[in-house]
Length: 247
Image 1: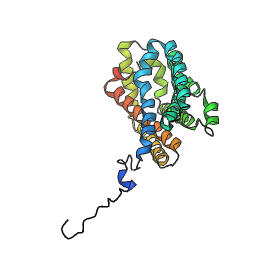
Image 2: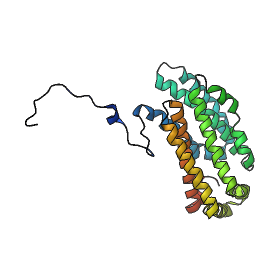
Image 3: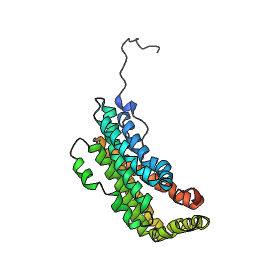
Image 4: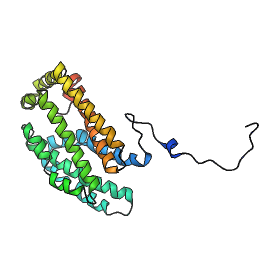
């Protein structure tokens, strides 16, 4: 630049300049992205892989928990921190996977059993929060929290009462019944309950993403993805119920 003495010394970039764009007003450090993105992927994956697999062959889907768990335990022993964290996360995911297989494979007509079945590993997860399996426990507990919030909102809005009716209906009627259940959510009171729950969860995610502990950020990612998946499911039930994956 004219009038400025040249310098051979490069000015280091500030770490704040390397931050990725904000999500919901909370900056996410690049180092945290692989873990949070992996957590989000593992929440969304069952929607596209586990659901059709369990519907066709629930026993083999449940047995798949074993290689998932074994792979996670072996990776958790790795000296590379990233691979070790990935293995620990996979251990937590295997618990959520098995719970989903058990419910959707054999108890899907009994919605009140959904949360208890998904929570079968709750004591182990609570115990793991203080040890080396903290990431696994955080992912499992966050997924369980998302399930509890979804089921709670469904119960408060009256949708839970139509669960068995939709799943028991013939294919040519199930889509219409699911669409009617989705329309029920758009009524003033159910819609208010749904939006309030979504706002509270978004605020919770904002708080966890600001936490220095990666386990908290992972939990926030899992809850946020659950919220997004629920939103997509509601949209599918409204505009294309036959593609919702429930029927």
